[in-house]
Image (cartoon, rainbow, N blue to C red; front, side, top):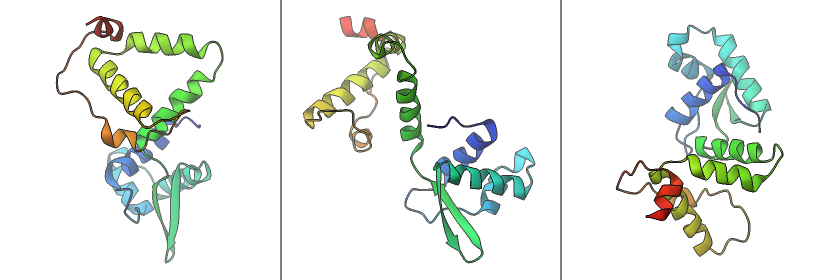
Length: 154
């Protein structure tokens, strides 16, 4: 998966934050207006959206003479893919996962445990995209700030 540059990330943030997945999307002008504080030319925003479409990050649909854009996947799906790509960089996936697990807070560890339990309950035999899972697993009501390995000992 492609990592995003600063301007690409800003454009994707507009799409992720303001465009519901069920909507028809937004125009270049609407994205440019949302990024007004950056003082970008319309053509710059148009080029970024075109490149993001080429990378498969956004979907676009013709509406008259204009295009309407929306994110191809959720922010969470994008971040999860970056994490999976990072695990594929080499070395031991197991060691990287253990190191990651030791770096999360207790609350984050609780979320991971709940997600893994829900995935196991679904009978999954391999890694899933977790799209349906995120609808069922939420952060615990209590906010513990301990490390994951400390939380496991509780």
